[in-house]
Image 1 (cartoon, one colour):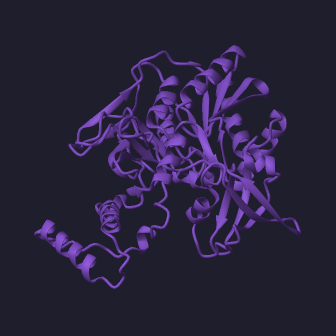
Image 2 (tube, helix red, strand yellow; image 1 turned 30 degrees about the horizontal axis):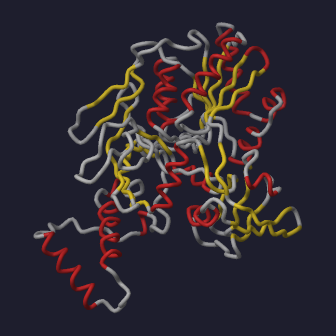
Image 3 (tube, rainbow, N blue to C red; image 1 turned 60 degrees about the vertical axis):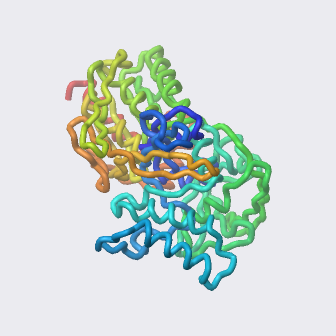
Length: 447
């Protein structure tokens, strides 16, 4: 989970996010974690309050080697560390072969190294964020993306990025990019052997700048210049399905998600829905507070929706205080391999408090909370602040939640189903949704 990243002078907030949003990076979406429920100002004389962020499946910072490829830090005692650090710094500044090496670069490397090597278990979540990476996370948490608006599946063995979806009214949509297009190069660069984060970093950028994609569409190669821009992204969508089933999808947890989710539930109630399907597939997480608010909206008063545990070992419960919405309606939750962090929190909470049936595939397994703290020079550090547990004190870190009923669909099939706006056609194209509806009907009929 994550809490939104904020400036040192902004209030502390928690986030829950997943690196799956790396796929959205091209979109302008990001997997950076927003802060989890904020605890107050970050430490440090010059530091302003920061937000805690809990990432779902957060990816390593761009340019960082995957954890398994990095050399291991020796477990032997490193005595007189401050003295040794100063000796190394002076030697590199005065005798290193590259004369352009600066003290600022050394300090940046030292901070990044501390974050990446401090805890082998959390290496992939801890990172030094550049000003542009921090800005991207902040915009994502506010429900505004900066980029072109495509979600893609990247294949390192070919270097191609297959477009899975295009955000309506985004720059890519206006430029004519469609699902099924294959991005071959970005600004003339091939990405074979590289990572999704590399492609995402190339496609995203500053609003107003242009990125040029070489796209293979069927048997034709076309060149598409697209001007990056900021654009809104609706985190919640709903649809009334046949037989009184309400379908509500949460794509991510941002500042606007909780209010939009409650509005969708109120609309379902006004339409006299008889059952609820909550779709959390491809949801990488986001703000911790937004995730817990969504879980609380559907949980009975007094229910524990999550426990967080910090370095002192104390467990803090998040308890539902308000009235339960759609009380008594049988509920099913759709999940997949990209359901992470805050979305996993909501799934576990509702399975416990509402006896919701979980349908789909094994979830990602990101159950830690990162804090994003600005450093006063435009950069920020993201480090693990706590871990969280389901209401029964189980953590699914590294393993993910297993569905009650497993139904296989690949990412392209899911994205295709999510793009269908006709209720009957949507059900026909979505095997996981059909299974959830069948389970709900059985519960309504008392079977």
